[in-house]
Length: 253
Image 1 (cartoon, rainbow, N blue to C red):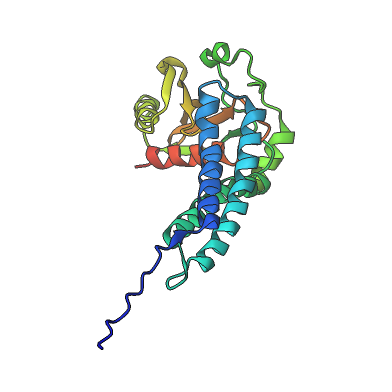
Image 2: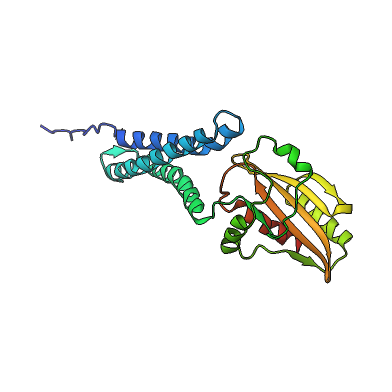
């Protein structure tokens, strides 16, 4: 009597619970970190709320990444559980959720606790029109003198005045064009005083920083000084110095 070959019925592989949990936790952590900026811009949270969101999002991301790596071993190709791609996605999302706040923290530690940067620390350009826009801002536009200047010289020795071999009128036009090209919102442009005032808004959080540019005659043509001041925060993560550098590069093109 001939016997037919028995059919082996394989039960479908189930997705690992660890893979699912790691992925979901990583997504939540990433949403907390990435959503902190828009939530602040919409007025849903204050700065304290931003820090809470980013702190918990970072720790959730780190835990989720570790969880996902365990899941990756359990669901590796040839294993009894599915979800390998899910765990890898969760690991990446968790790493990003932790990495962004961690990078900001390291940047904060590396930058001096100042928020007023200028190319002329002895006689910094003065704000006029923007003063009214800064009502209620915790940071004053009054320069704090050597206490700030000394720290700036140590951290950003390259922030210096720019000299152009052009007349003050031509240099003013160049300075104004550069400010517009770089995306600043022009608040005031007074050629007779050689003064340009503008505001720059950060992309993620929508923080507003203010800039004043001063154009004066010089022996070689014209001298341009720039000052950038944050409205919020004791430190600026190096943002004001970076803004001045970017402006100077545009100016010299």
